Length: 533
Image 1 (cartoon, rainbow, N blue to C red):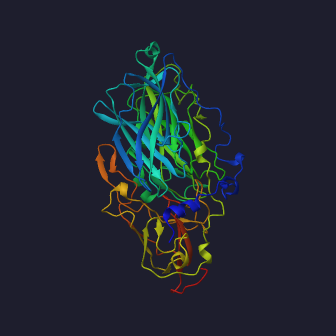
Image 2 (tube, rainbow, N blue to C red; image 1 turned 90 degrees about the vertical axis):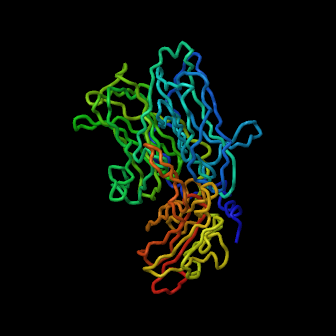
Image 3 (cartoon, one colour; image 1 turned 135 degrees about the vertical axis):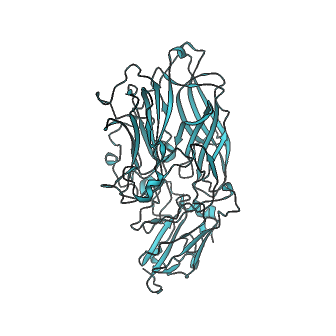
């Protein structure tokens, strides 16, 4: 059986994947967000005496296969009071490169699933700055700033996703534009405050599933189109009752691959008006299927005046034509000023510009798209049937039966009779293990043959028949008032059974957490084994 590191290397070797990828079908003109400029960005504010300060949180040791949520005190912040006007997040390797800097990991190797800078102030704790792997830059218009005080406590909440079986070390890097209170420019600054709008929050892991084919015309809007059990994933921060007059001055959205846009709307007296649509501009050749994207933020002159009694709400829309998007998010951090400031427009009587500009262009860490045909893996449909186990163990990043990287009999698809289930057990994540010792794995349906090279756009949960195990493993529950209790993406079980409703055929799957892992099983009628099902 090949080692996990050798298997990983085989699947990620194709430097030419961008040219050969099966994901290269979409033309640039047809990509979501194609009309949005990639070079015209939200303008930066500038002040005399403004400082640009870079902090490196860490080094953070990343365990093999890590996908845990962490929260630790963070003392990396200004030492004097002042105003933060811009916040740019990033993730870099801890190792110093030949130029004395730090390289950015490839997104298909290690990525910042999310980072949230929580601020403790006045006896409360509130999420204030945030980042996902799309690395949207927060910035407010000229004349506004987030009022900072050194007595504020900062908590670094992060989820760093290691897609490989290799340990590493990284820094969470963030650069702020800061105007000290002692500078004359600070005297004329208008304070802004954060309002966390979240379709599934506020909680440590605010997610929902967008299933292939769900919604209308290939688009699924959450929570508007949530059905049945999906409704439990609607969060209290999806809407907000405005308690007093305020002016919204800046926002941008966060979503996951597959996401198209975040919407912000206001309702007054039964009438609803759209305030802003944060759109995803995809650079990914295959379309809305990867992190190769940047989000639009509001323009510098965007000002929306709201009155007490108005209601704000946010929704997020995903493209469900190509694939399912499990554990998806939809967040908008809105910065507002108290009262009605100069230039504020009433959205119920004046036109609001609902379109914005990107905060950055394409990022080089998204260049390995995957999908090239030379991964060295077989087409499971051509393989002889394997054994008829009642259970398939997952250990060392290998599916014990039917792993496409395994030679000989171990690689043959295990067989299960129609109407029965095949059980999977993740031995890489036991109850006795800590989350950092664990490697969560999934069994997620992908379209056969599901055997091309791994990258940010391949494989996908795009099978005609959908199934997903959830992240098999265990994680903590840490009840925090107002933030929910489950502090993990894990399903808090390490077993899963295939649906009994599957028809005869060969089913291919992958691990969403470590997508170089591929496998197959075969459903047969009456237990008869065949070469091709």
